[in-house]
Amino acid sequence: MELSESVQKGFQMLADRGSFDSNAFTLLLRAAFQSLLDAQADEAVLDHPDLKHIDPVVLKHCHAAAATYILEAGKHRADKSTLSTYLEDCKFDRERIELFCTEYQNNKNSLEILLGSIGRSLPHITDVSWRLEYQIKTNQLHKMHRPAYLVTLSIQNTDSPSYPEISFSCSMEQLQDLVGKLKDASKSLERATQL
Amino acid sequence: MLLELSEEHKEHLAFLPQVDSAVVAEFGRIAVEFLRRGTNPKIYEGAARKLNVSSDTVQHGVEGLTYLLTESSKLMISELDFQDSVFVLGFSEELNKLLLQLYLDNRKEIRTILSELAPSLPSYHNLEWRLDVQLASRSLRQQIKPAVTIKLHLNQNGDHNTRVLQTDPATLLHLVQQLEQALEEMKTNHCRRVVRNIKTTKK
Image (tube, rainbow over all chains, first blue to last red; front, side, top):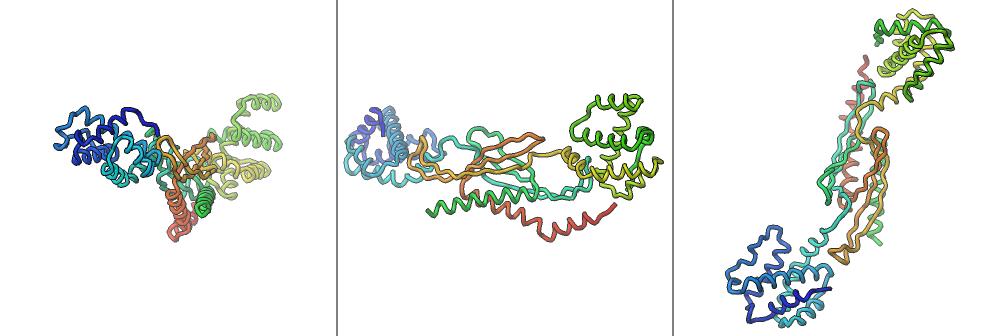
């Protein structure tokens, strides 16, 4: 994990019981996690009355350091011993190391979900809807008498909001072909998970 | 159901008895070829010279024949109705037989060509799939994230295009379940009854 001097400095400040008493430490820590994980978190996350006595520049520095470290740790799936080692190097005492690790453990799942959802991917199929019709005639051709399906795939695209759906028509045979191939894929998936 | 032939149409077709049956058969072949590939005016000129008539006359004859064949195919009229419709033209027995044969021989293909003229959406052609497992990304290491990558081949108006898409295992199962239900629908009593009733409505 590569961490800058700024992060280390921020943590060293956070370790100092003179600047951050127990309450302030816990509040800042929680604020860091909240800013990252809570979709509705706003800038007022550091506006707690128990943090008012601390210099705002220091507060921001420590908050940023904590957030950066949390993200790096989450990205690399750091375990408790890795966390402890780094925090020790930043002069955290035992109690604060424990506090940090507990808070990290509590938020680990949400953190990993958040990080895992960042990134580009192919357009993702989220749903399908279908319509069955019986074609009787067109202005060019009477007495057609055949069933047809209209299938619409709902697509979620990370890049652009364009093309939210793909629609296509198919005959019964074609739909059978499509379903057959999808079933092959899902059987393959089942077999792969049993390996 | 009888075909209604306009006066103009009858005039154009009046050319046919004036040539012998081999020529009419040839016109029939040209008419179907034009339906397949599009018209070629040069053919009219060549035929006009050989028959010693104006190329307009040849064109009208072929077009009249084309229209006769496409309308009959579109409406899917029975042999009897076709014969009755053509009867009003006052052609010879031999010519009538020839026209009927032309109709029956080419009906299926003409209907296929006509079906391509309908408004259409992209239609399904093929599907390829692949199983992938994402192991890491820039923002998160040590992942195991299975996904199914799909290449959907669609046709529209002769153009072939493909879309590459992805889905997760849960959605894949959902897709299979939904589409199997769609297929089952055709076998229900409701659908069977509708199909039966539409088919038996004769005009």
